[in-house]
Length: 198
Image (cartoon, rainbow, N blue to C red; front, side, top):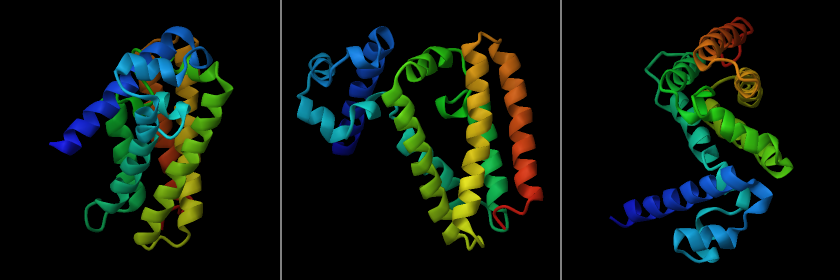
C-alpha cells in the first residue's frame, strides 16, 4: 500500500511537471511551482526527482531497467542481442514512450530540443542505460560487456534520434514507425554480424 502511494505521488508530480513544462518551456517553470500544483513541498519533489531535468525525463530509470531486464530474463540459450531486439520492437509496437515513435512524441521532443539542460540530461541518461546494460551483459558472461553495451546503445540511440528528427519535421507517424522498425532490424543485424554480445 505504501509503495503504491509513493508510486502514485511520483507519477502525479511527473505528470504535472510534464504538463507545465510542455506548456511554458523547461526554463520558465520552477520546482516550487510544480510542487504547489502537485500539492507537495519542494523537498518532496526532490525526494522523488534529484534534479529538475528528471521531472521531465522521468523514464531514464525505466529504460535502464528494461534493457538490463531484457538480458537478465531472456530465455535459456537466447542471445542477449535477440532479447534486446525483441524488447525494442515490442516498445515500438506498443507505441511506448521509450519506443521512439508515437502520436504525441514530437511535442515532447520539441521541449527537449529547445532546452540545453534537457539535452544534456538525455545524453547522461544514455550513459546510465549503457552502464546498466553493461552490468547485465557482464552477468551474462559476454566477452566485452562495456563495448557490447556501448555499441548497442549507440545503435538504438541513432535509430531513435533519426525517428525523432522525422517526427519533428512533421513526417506521418505510421511512415516513421515503419522505417523505425526497418532501421532497428538493420541495426541489430549489423551488431549480430559484428559479433557484438557474444
